[in-house]
Image (cartoon, rainbow, N blue to C red; front, top):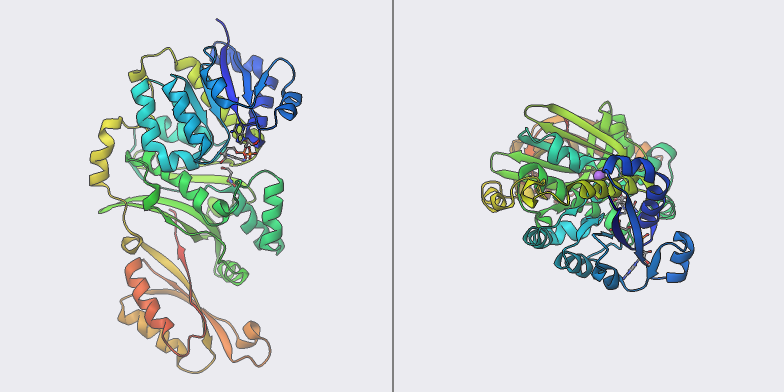
Length: 444
Ligand SMILES: NC(=O)c1ccc[n+]([C@@H]2O[C@H](COP(=O)([O-])OP(=O)(O)OC[C@H]3O[C@@H](n4cnc5c(N)ncnc54)[C@H](O)[C@@H]3O)[C@@H](O)[C@H]2O)c1
Ligand SMILES: N[C@@H](CCO)C(=O)O
Ligand code: NA
């Protein structure tokens, strides 16, 4: 059989990795796919540079649309990123009847409904394993491996850049900004690293996993998104003293009233495997009713780990493209006509309805009665306390300091209740700075 031809749009970190891995492992890949897979055309901004990277056998153009229009190209690999030109090109490829492989989680989390509908109508596949947790085959696992299960929840470290920053801050005491620069140099960070550190990238990935886990449409606009920019090293230290690690987690959970969809820094018991996922590594824990808890771990960013996922999608397409579209795995695992009803039955809940436990840090006046005032307000609101840690004033503010840190861990509480009680605590004259609130999850 003749090799299937692909056009690659964007020869940056991931595009370069795809090109290299496909060339290096082409024999094994074609033995698996049943035919060769060749990138015969590349679109790049800097054509001369790209041509020198890919060699003379590959045609390099500045105009991506010309590649999409080429009748020999069956698969378009979109590795430009973002929701601008990338969206136009993906829709153009679908309209031209080309299958699409993309690592672009921002595009699919925001415009997935439109893109998947267009692809289904045209009978083409949009494959996106690389968009979530890089090289970890989590889309494959959720869509196919766990298909027997009613998924109850999943939680993951799904942004390598922030996990790298948090790991280095905790274990080496390094500064946030210095580690972020290193993550950018290593090719982990998004083009706009604000997406990483503000939790947006993790929320894009979580939105896609949530849709696949529960059979609901992608609803990025309903996700609760918090990043790590407000996290203080003091909190990382206190969490450790209490037996926890702080991780930026994406959590989606099926509860009675609907689905939780949230990204925020989170205390996780230090003994959990996921608490020990360090550096740019990713991990996703999935709880299914039949299988129980499963854990997926690996490199979530970087050229070749991400290329591994892109090429897996290319192989799937090479095998499946002649199959009747109805026999392919649906984009979001569930048959598309069932998604809207499921959304009514499982609405994404506002954060005020989420029930979780909390870590609170209050900078308070070091005087008698403050602890009683604060715990009194929690008791009045019906919030039960799990642990209290009070630092010596000298440790916090230096010798003779009149301030101290009070750290409180709570049992499960509705977020709306916690918001109200925090407002009352904040109004106390003995509370001297904005209260830090982090969530805490047992993940068992
Ligand atoms: N870097 C990672 O570790 C990683 C991991 C998973 C997913 N992703 C996703 O993969 C995609 C690519 O990321 P990246 O890190 O390789 O980015 P990158 O910035 O390194 O590469 C993007 C490339 O696209 C090129 N480009 C821009 N506009 C173009 C156009 N109109 N025509 C042709 N080329 C154009 C740029 O010049 C650049 O070389 C993004 O969606 C990103 O979110 C990246
Ligand atoms: N910027 C992303 C790349 C992988 O999607 C990360 O750091 O995880
Ligand atoms: Na993946």
